[in-house]
Image 1 (cartoon, rainbow, N blue to C red):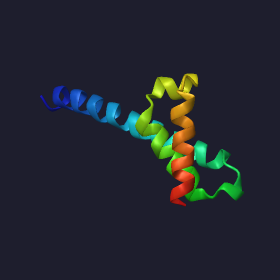
Image 2 (image 1 turned 180 degrees about the horizontal axis):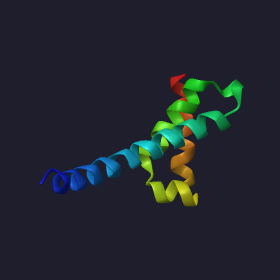
Image 3 (image 1 turned 90 degrees about the vertical axis):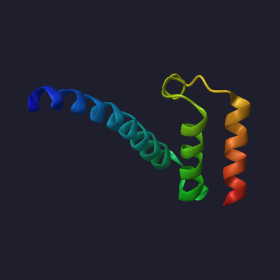
Length: 80
């Protein structure tokens, strides 16, 4: 009985952790690819806002609304 219950629970946990892993990987890669003069905080802000405003498939395909991306960049630069 325990084995039967563990399978669905582990699948749920794996599904949740995949989203978290994607977000962590995106933030880490995005921040690492930023130029040092832009500042770590600005790059982290941009990564967080991009994850909030776009789906994983949009981010992976690069199918992003340019106006929205520019407004995110400007917003993060102002908050620095």
